[in-house]
Image 1 (tube, rainbow, N blue to C red):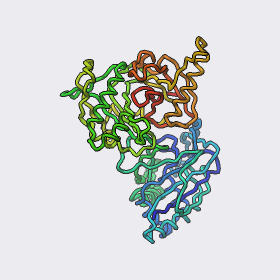
Image 2 (cartoon, one colour; image 1 turned 180 degrees about the horizontal axis):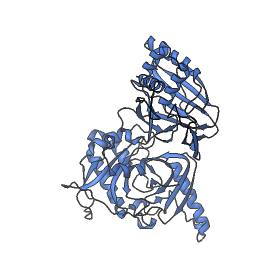
Image 3 (cartoon, one colour; image 1 turned 90 degrees about the vertical axis):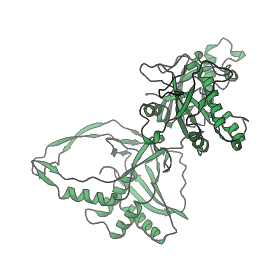
Amino acid sequence: MNRHILFSIEFLDGRYHGQGNGRPEWPPSPFRLFQAVIAGNARGGPIPEPLRHALHWLETLPPPTISAPPAMAGQPLLTYVPNNSSDEEWPPTKAPKTLHPMLMNGDRRLLYIWTFSSACPQSVLHAQVLAAAGSHITALGWGIDLVVTKGAIVNAVPMSRRDGTVYQPAPDNTQADNWRLQLRVPCKGSLISLERTYQGFINRNVTAGVTRFESAPVYACHAYSDGVLRPWVACRLRRAGELRPVSVRHQLIAPLVGMVKNACMESLNDSDSAAAAAAVLGHPKDAPCVRVSILPLPTVRSGPTDGRIRRVLLAEPTGSDGKWIDLLALRLEGAILKPLHGEGRFPSLILETIHTGAKKAGSDWAFLSRYIQASRCWASATPVLLPGYDDRKQDKGDHTKRLARAAQLIAKAIKQAGIETPAHFEFSKIPYFSGALHANAYQPREKLRHYPRYHVRIEFETEVTGPLAIGAGRHAGFGVFAACGD
């Protein structure tokens, strides 16, 4: 049976000053909590032996789940503090230090949940020691980040949070690059390295006015999701028999999606045919199977670009188990895209899976990050097809009412895409990215061609993680969004 070590942390002030890699860190990393447990219980002396054994055991556990309130980066403040690089210099010189706090919005309570098996009595003892040690934590982050902490062992922890975010660690067998948040976590050797670092600082040597001690803490970086993720796989387009990539014009989104659908169906076994038809083709509409969206990705950016399509992304709905994506990622490698109905405008194309987990995607990864990152601001790279009509008969000729109706339909499209985050948006026929075309220049397939289309820019109240697509054509390459500046 699995049980949980729960650390409940309440900040006395609504500010947190900890940083990771020189940037404001949110949520505070599990390794920072690991450091706080050591500092709070050692008090400048040796760590009690029971706690030492418990901390070594904690290093072997999987990363914890974190529940944290929303926070935003405050204004940076440059200040000067005494420079302790020399113990002989008096009065001490001052060194610049930048304060860049994260500002919590109302709630100040965080939860850290480590899961362990209670089948081993020794594990239960270690968990009890750690839970008791949690009450001795006085600060998390900098010394000014005072907290009140309680530790407990619980059988179940409610993971939903209406006023914040639950950060889930990525499973070890997933592509960690798909998860935008990297947090430091304790690993084997962390405790010893922190003790060595502290002793090195205490016994430091001063040479020519410079403090010298050589030691660094040991930790691991683990990927976290800031909410529920959407499983996806990306492929690049290239010519048959050649290594160089190929691009497709914006107007050919519909036939390109059709060719990818055919390749998906041909790659699946006959035993999967019924479920595959529901997942890939959407037939029938009321099938219980999840729907796989096929999203051609235009090359858009803020600077000059041609906007042509060089990559295709396949995605399941947010919160899905990724079954179809995992299967298609294996089966689509090297798949040939065959023109439909004698379509002669396409060269012979091959799909090549982009393996982002190996960090060898180069420009591909830099490009994909615009579509899959977490951001508050998004703009459409392909126009949104409204899920209805904006020109009711009774409002014919009234442009104001037509725009109001279009705004209602865009709000409906956001909700239909499963996005509950409050948002503000604006829309236009003119694209927000260079490389994109006027909304009416795109030609959806015949079934969707009668729907009005607009380019949309959305600003959410909190960050939303991509890939993001809304509207009537969200499964077929329309209404695809890329992150944009505030």
